[in-house]
Length: 459
Image 1 (cartoon, one colour):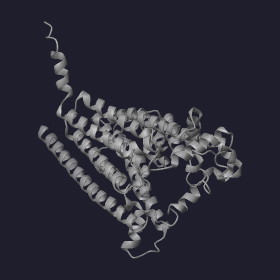
Image 2 (spheres, helix red, strand yellow; image 1 turned 135 degrees about the vertical axis):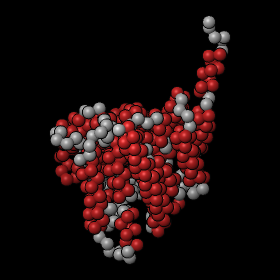
Image 3 (cartoon, rainbow, N blue to C red; image 1 turned 180 degrees about the vertical axis):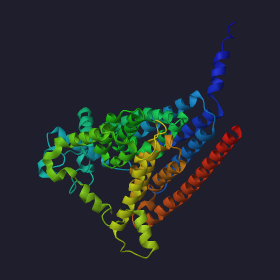
Image 4 (cartoon, rainbow, N blue to C red; image 1 turned 60 degrees about the vertical axis):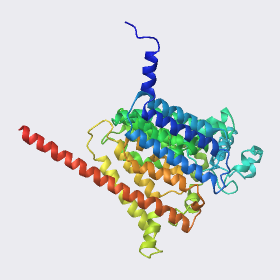
């Protein structure tokens, strides 16, 4: 006998409008309103702008809590993806508010389209005068002295994007495209880890991700896509394609190469060979620039305090704690190298217990490298955020969200206030992380004891 008309629809509506879905809908609407309000604000306004970013961070953490403790249902993922897309389109069309890097992307694409090696000249060089305009060129940062810093895969992306349109909006849309495609890869890796797919929210709704990719158009979105692709290929047992994907990630931002030990399978030559071939092939069109193919990287290390150690929070902390302002950068570099080596050895010699066994070692390496680097620019933290979806470690989600907010406040200025920000970020993160790791180890130990007791009783 058929159900009376309307009963099925009412039942479906009740299944959709659960407490979890209603809470996410409410948070999503409020978040969307803050994004629409924020794009109308002046980023230099020390009052409203940081406040709206704080509200977005709080709403994001509230949504993460709802997903973690609410009941799962079919509508949750639909809500997460739907609002994630709305957030991104809201910040896509206005001019970038937090960074001008995207103007350099468009410029590099234009230079290449003119048949010129982007590593040869600074934007202010007389040889490039005929390419200047009133929209892109005046907004390029370091135009008077810095050649491009971006590796070959990034340059190819810039070239292809500008063949569609030499506009900031087009470049931002391309980066948003990489960002959205990453959703699918994250969902695949979440499934591989045996976790609820709703954890996608930790990436899709993260304010740092929304603003830095769709809002500012940072090329890190492409790097994250290739990192996720490498992890997915590794999970699927495609060693050659794992090497290609990791090589492309390194050709976008260089530092993803540190993930090699986590993705390499011992005594397998396909992955390293494919990675090496990809990197060599990527640089080959630009080798005529000679040593200039490294771009502004040497100058960047000096300008950003990497050469003198002022960028590294742990080194600055050691200098202050031990009253040793002359503590050399080499000492910190050696300690950092030992820490990374230990993680690399552990990753290389781990036992493969599951197809997704590379996820946790990759996260450990990425997190350690990033924390040792202690970057000032928060988009360098963005590659940690996808890992929080399939390697449950909530402190990273809180840390990246807090770092994003604090870097939009007047306190982000360099000097003593920067030291204060880092203290407020790293110390609570360290305490929270140590507590959770201790709790997890204790829980795992209790579970093992219970398992042994059960086996003994069974015998």
